[in-house]
Image (cartoon, rainbow, N blue to C red; front, side, top):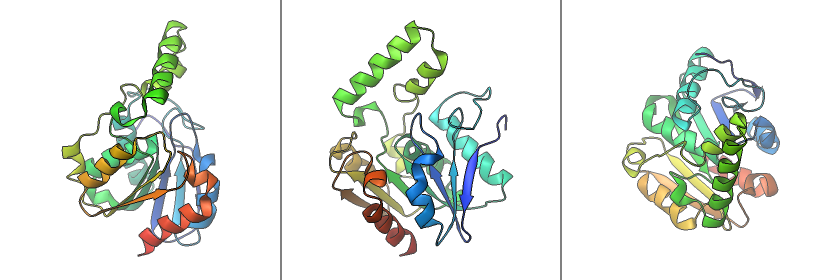
Length: 221
């Protein structure tokens, strides 16, 4: 692999890997890391080109990030882990679970989408406008980042149907992701549970007590 991931790790036991969203880093998981590490070896990664992880030379796509995760786990001797993905991190997680089923124990998808049709129109419009502007300004780093939300991933219903891991699909009642799309993801994954929490896309950060309890009940149940 052409990169070394930056990450933080806390706790012992079964591995639980946390994947952040677009343009973020592992610091968004402070409340989750502190709570989840009471029960699990909790690892929060910076994905390729985010936070302290270098961009490298490989393609800057969701599918590449899924392959990067497999490489990270192999490098650190983690044969199997619970995978938690928020937003674009969830998009990585669902592709990873479909491609590397033997490496996933349980799967948590928070505020994730299979494609741009799942995002509410007003937000997707802002993303695509920012993408076009950054391209015109030759801001490669910014356009690559926004490009992940324009054409960086296309998970399919047929791929989700192959996921073998017990799955929790969780989102805010006023999420940036359409509730109908969140329901479609849950319906497409066998052995999945669907939960909506009152709030927006950032329910994990804004309502960590409620959010963490739901996730831990799922993992430990």
